[in-house]
Image (cartoon, rainbow, N blue to C red; front, side):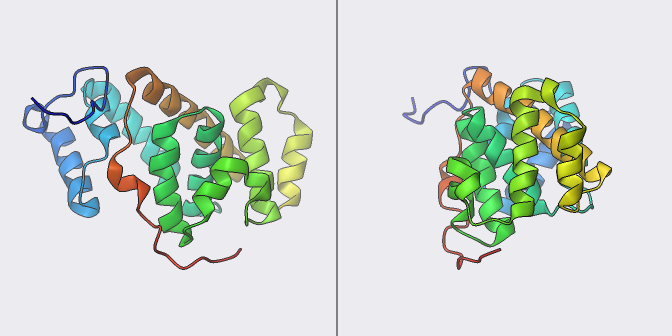
Length: 197
């Protein structure tokens, strides 16, 4: 019997029992990061949904474009904080610290991005992401005009909205499953020198 906290309220499959493609993906992540993020193990409970989830995740988060990888992570952290998703704020906060090379940024964005040490362009991006997160039915042409004035094109605007929408799903699945952040996430990227925008 272990005293380790459960990482999900649903069954978590053993790595050896997973389909080869899923097991290989998880092992590759483990090799790169040194641990297996719990999201991979929790979502592996349903292999078809695991594949669909990570295919869409990768299409949004790993693509080239005008949004940097750090800016994509800012969207995740800000919207996940609004949705009170502990797993995503903690895990993507770690990724944001690393991608932005800034140990302060994730805490600032999660707490109040309007007071964070980020650019006006990034604040406009997060304003739109939060609008997509909370009141997407109110999105109008003025929102597009504001973003265009900050140098975003329509493909960028799609990316901002799609990331906010996708992580609304992720946040809700993390809450449904009671997904626990790995302890490793809390300290990742904290020893970096602080940088300003």
